[in-house]
Structures are given as structure tokens and as C-alpha cells.
Image 1 (tube, rainbow, N blue to C red):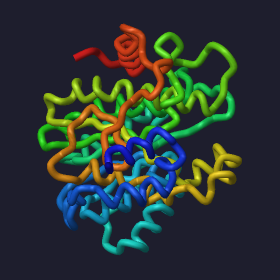
Image 2: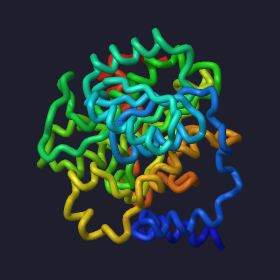
Image 3: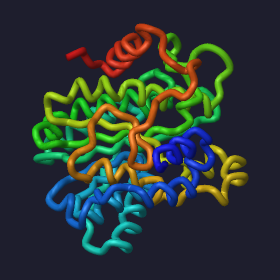
Length: 318
């Protein structure tokens, strides 16, 4: 009965993605909440941690005892987020690191600095995101959302391999339920064709994250690194207010708070036993990645997309 209700919540979208879905589902979750101190002695890095889901994720990981590195584009905003976390959780070990994930050269610099300074990273959360109104190219020449949501996270994880390998590290990509509306853009990953729409670009890049998560898992599995993708549902964050103000106004009574949106990220990072990698999660359950036949990949699309992404990030196949 609970499985059927869970599926109904998921397929009808609004109830499942809203705060109602979170409140209903948490009633039947198994007893696998990470206990206090679950991440004591461990180290986490969270991109886009200066507000919203990223800041709440950093707080959730710190609550469990992790030392948390807040990777932010704007240092002053990052320090403000760290101060807010410390005000709620005195004694939290926080480090503000400047990194623009949409600039692959800056990713290389920041990752190299972390590898040089840190003995290990146990949790890496790729949360940084944007929804530009007009087509914008990142410093490397690729479209902004695909760089920020796909190329940057892939490259960062690859470069952090030396400190992620060998100790059950977990990588989490914060995706979006909006990806269900889009097919994998294997023949136009840079969104060069047709009329550009920010919400579509965002959803396309999130579809890429989810489609490529199993391939990332396969790439790094031998190092003991698990890779997960998840979506937070409809969470009330500064990013939503900026990018989709009308949607926020209409759905405001239904929106989750940031802590509810970040719950599955923190759970994936800390629960035991470790959830299986390569899957797409929402509200602590693995979800189907397609609900419509029109969004399914054609044969060869995912492999074509994977090769394009590796080439664009300057990486080789393992």
C-alpha cells in the first residue's frame, strides 16, 4: 500500500514534490537515519554552499560531525553562510573555499589546492547551479548550464580522486525533477539550435547529470567511490525566487523548506549501509529516470553524450 501511494505521489508531481510528499513519505522510512556523529572525523565538500540547499546541506553534514568545506564563487557570501551555520551549530568546523565551478580552469586550480592540503575527502556534493535567462557561455566556451552542472562536477570529481579513493567516499549530484521533461540532448549538448529558454537549458543539463550518473559510478567504482544523483523536490530557496519568481509565487504554500529539500543529500552521504550507487533518488528512495517514452534515449545516445562530456572536460576514457 505504501509503495502504491509513493508511486502515486511521484507520478502526480505536485503532491510528491511538495512539502506534503516529504511529510507523508517520512512516516514510512526505515530506521536508517544517520546517528549523531555519523560523520565524525570525516571531511565533506559542498559546491554552491553560500545559500539555499547548499548551505542547508553543509549544515546537515556538520550536524553529523563532518568538517565541511564550503565551495563558493563569492567569498563574502560564503563567509556569511559559514557564520550563519556557526550561529546555529557552534563549534562546527567550516572552511570557505573559492571556486567557480563554471570555469574549468578554476576547478583545476581549486581541486589541485584541496588535494595538496587535505589527506582525504569523504563526501562531495555537487550543488552549484544556475538558470540563465539568455544563452551564456562559460569561460571555456561551452554553454553555462552544461558547464556548471555537468562538466565542472565531472572534472572536479576526477581531480579529487586521489583524496576520494579508498574509503567509501560518496559523491552526490543535486539534480532536478525538471529533468523528466527533457530528452538527453546527445546531438546538441551546447544548446546551439532552436530558441534558447533558461528553464529548458536547466532541465536538459539535469537530464545529462542523471543519464551519466551510472557511467560516473562505473568510472570511479574501482576506487571505492559511490556516485548518486537526486532531486530535492520543490524547495523554497533564493535560487528559485530569482530564477522562477512566478512559479514560486503560485506554489508558495506547497514548497518545502531547504532542510527538507536537502534531507536526501545528507542521508545519501551518511546512512549505513551505503546506498547502491549509480541511481537517481528522491525522498530517500531510488526513482525511475523516465516517465514518458518520448524522453528515453535512442541507442547510442548516452555513449555519444559521455564521449562529448569527457572531451569537453579534457578527460580520457578509463
